[in-house]
Length: 365
Image 1 (cartoon, one colour):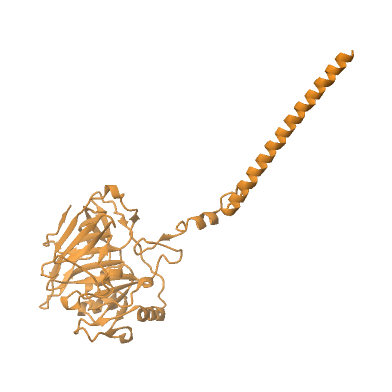
Image 2 (cartoon, rainbow, N blue to C red):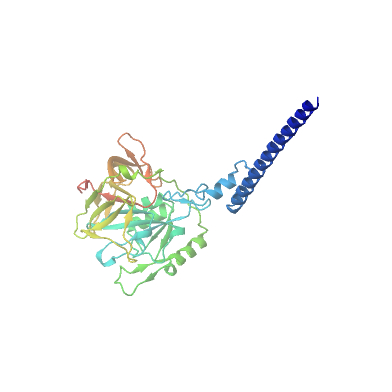
């Protein structure tokens, strides 16, 4: 009996030893886990992150992705903060004679339309958002009726210095917001380093004073459709657009830059820059074919702006044939492919080259 009792006591002692062993193993495991969690918590706190998962909130998403709340600007599709998407537009008649070069501010325009004025000399209608006006713009030249139709698409303030009789009558008849140097001298100045009439300029603060005096701050026009850039792997290495306006000094080449996915401008083979030294570049180049005829002995033109005609639309280094349509003087000119689907442009600057049917432009890759 005594031996059995001793054996029982020994077994109980062994069992208690095992229990104590398991107990301390469990305690150590818990301590290790606590240390790991404390270390992880400290790491998360240093990283500025909470251990407690949170339900997603719109404000948190916007803060982490600063472009998520931006919207496309009407004039060129560029993403801007809400409330800045529709700044008031201004349309400037810009001189393009050799005496006017280099022009001031031309590289900053959101959209430029180039077309002949008279005698083969071209002129620019440069469209700016009021929020993007440069400190110097010009030289400013006189109005022509077909340029007024293009300015009217934007319900823009039309900035010019005088004009043909037909153009001045049209400004009144079509109720254009008129900024004529003849009647608003305080908004312009003449540069003594240039010869008249190639020396009329204006600038940002003078223009903003004019807009404020008229209560003009929001645009009232429809934009183009815009898209994302073509993937770089699908872009051609090079391409060119050649537009031979009939006079020497006005023959235009647009050369594609694959890396930037835009085109830079050359005139008679030389890279074209404005007065600031900035190269003239555009993300979309459109060649719009329009009928034109001479009206008088001063070679002034009447050019078709309303209706439809042929167009070639170039972006992402590729050109496609299509058509343009404009329903009325105030309607936007829109561009369509050969299946009559409106073409979406790249966001950013656009140049429209208006050519007569006899001008044989070329595109190459």
